[in-house]
Image (tube, rainbow over all chains, first blue to last red; front, side):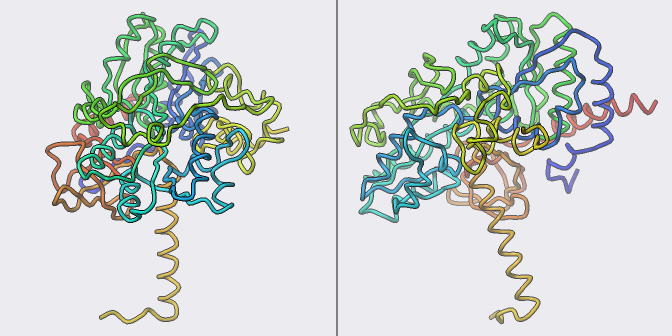
Length: 367
Length: 104
């Protein structure tokens, strides 16, 4: 595989047809499989994977999109900071159009606020170094894939004694949310498709504990079409067995122990705290706050911010969609007052949100 | 010293810049996307990786034992794991098994 780019081989249509045929032969009970990663949601829609599954295999999109579960109150704080004359906001592109209670960062930017899109939190450090008279605030949103990179940025800021850099943290971790989903008898999840890149950092131990405790099997899968199709196929087989197996099918990138250096840096900078997940409410121990040692890089401390309760748009059912209890087309706002061009809720704004994916790839379903 | 490209070459150069910019913008917008890239140079705590034809400076500080020529999973400007080529081959084998069974 000398000229491999580790992407194309996982798009092989011959192998895909065979897996789809094997799935077609599934004749067991009806299964609800939940995928908990925004990138999986997007890939599934982009490759039309739902259409390839038999009727009895139901794929649910879970709360795995960090932008979608960021509460409105966080966006309100970001807007507050953006309005300060000496503040530069550095953010991932996805957050730009998420509606706050009254406005969004995109609107503030149009009004003259200095808001810059960055690909990496390390780029936000460069912005801080290059603008010593301004205060740079990085909007720190993400799960375990992104958080170590943000931790690295904070550690570098600490080493360099950078006086004008801080992060506004809304980072979250998956385990506590997964426990709630597994235990929720209302949703009846039979199996999980686990997020490949979060797992590359965390390892797979927690999934095995969850499988033991709640008898919910899981497959760790990558994001190419073959990864997802084969992952679902394996899940149909695991669900027919005793129900506490976890299979790692993304072994090219996911090791049992994950990435110990990334985990260590995460623990060094952040400590667990409770967090509000849009749609799921408050989940204890599911958030990450900046440790006291790095307090001068914590925007909440630096700017003396107080969280207020954000206002969700009336009629928005992002919460039910995130829990897998409703599909986007059941929302009264979907396709009418909530579209990718003018989103009402976060599930529509994020390019990996369930509603955005549904809208883009299911156009025929819209009334 | 290069001459400024003329005529059709200028057009091709502009199209190239456009696609390069689109790739970079796409990378900015998709925060969750982790993609494989090949390490082409390393030094002074920094590394350069080639990602889908675009070269970019990335950090390798979350990994140890990374070498030039390694493929790594890159996310938000940082390599977060080395791609294990043997495991990749094994997975491709696994995914092809059903196809082989069908062809028997």
